[in-house]
Picture 1: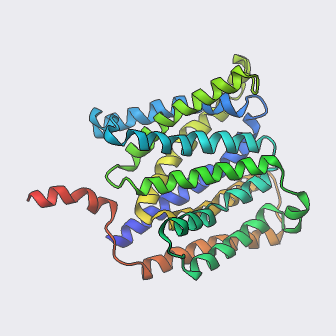
Picture 2: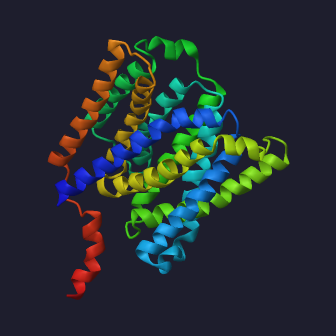
Picture 3: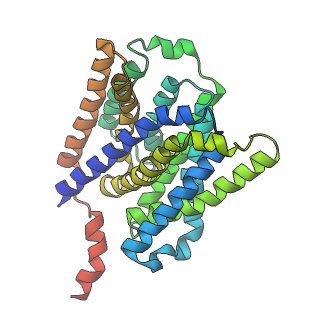
Length: 320
């Protein structure tokens, strides 16, 4: 059962990485017509409606109530949806996609450091070693085989905003593990809906103060295909599979799959006609090898823990 849960968690995490890899290309093109604030407000209004509808259909209307957890869900939704998207997409409009992708790949390191600060338990050296290998591969990929260009290009304020967004999502991801009684769908739907309140409020304040401009209907319609991708696969499917992966693998193991995000962006560019250098291909292989090694070692060495399905079945088993 544990091996099956690990496999399903790995598939979920990889699905998220692949989908989000496409968002760097799709999102960058949308930001040329619509600012990050209204773009995020529009996509998550639609995403929240879809998620709540799916939740009601699969778990019943009672699942729509956050109950006593509403404050925690509100703040987690603010971090994961308002924090990540407003910071990251505003930063992406002013940063090179290469540096933004590298910063996104820092999520495993940030997660390990946050867990270290919370639990006072230092992660194993193997986690850091595999993370270093994965990051080395990512650096080769996004720098087109010349890692020195990342340093020479410098880190601007847009890159700092992307880092703030990644840190926000790390805290949100850790929050998913704190509510084991919530299914991945329920956690995603409620945090997205409550987080949208913060997104809409931030957009209203930014527009009212003149910091951002609301786009005309023509501009929104022009990027409707991008919004559709960012909403359905990006905001609904990928976040649900991500939260499922957190529940099945644990946050520190799941976030290692975040290294697939820049690799996926790299693959998309190949299909669009880009011809990579052999060093870049070696970097992609390094990243995949590090992720695979971590997954196999986790299966072999991890202590026996309850899976999400087993936790849900406990009350029913106790009654029989």
